[in-house]
Image: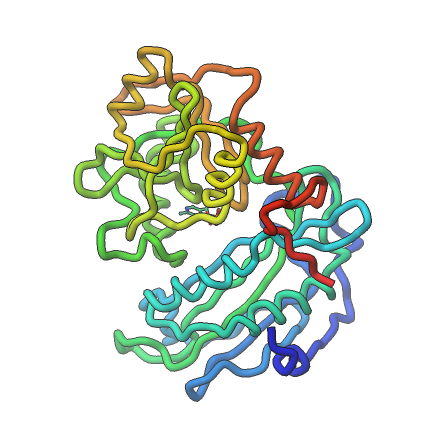
Length: 356
Ligand SMILES: Cc1ncc(COP(=O)(O)O)c(C=O)c1O
């Protein structure tokens, strides 16, 4: 971190805090925003000093390139408060690095680490009273970068904005989800942008997901774009499948986001002595496992939902149910991760990062 940069962060505080209007016991996910945001401009070939300003709308020209060419990337992270009011982040440098991996792919200028980390820490210190303390709640953090330069010309923008906004949030999903294994649409392709956290990846998912919702599912499970035979990831989560006592997840690729929760689940599972395979897994293998009773669990893993158990899946007009188990890997792994995140347990991996 560079002190030089943090010294340059200017702070304009709000005169009208909204915090007393918020019901912290009934928080939705991602719909309430804190009093301030961090904003940092890229102009004249460089990133300028970050500013913290009251949370407010952004004014853009109709020709701004974000509207036309979709140069937009983002991250999703959380800040947690422990019982002594300490503020914690979970592997924040992984988000910083991934933002720049996404930036490079979308021809967006990379953001120096200190702008991200110093900016984030200054914002969190100011917004610390917004970090909820009710169980499973946290401050969801949304860092994003988009093309703010103008012109109806299909070329990279010369101006960008990096913004960090925060949202005190409750749990992401209410309960177990039913998913549809996709047979036609693709989320990403070889050589594409699937590994980047690019806004357009999500836009492309909405229509097929709506079709799945109309059929009674909550999420789509994406398969490989070439054959649609291999299971890749969920809408905003990586996916794990437990056959007998072995946990299986697809390897990351051009098409899959390298999730921080996925990485953490892999390390925790190994540490707990759970057999783990990182390999391609076909839909047919999962169906066969469902038929012969060896399919024990499927769950999504991602920052928002942490671990999201799957109750059943649909494939080619047929539904398959997952068994209801007492002691699930999903529950065990979720406990391990969240205990680290909320500073309820020792962190032997060194993932917790204190903001002070
Ligand atoms: C497409 C996709 N896959 C996986 C993930 C999980 O990534 P992480 O664990 O870093 O949140 C996300 C969420 O960020 C996502 O949007």
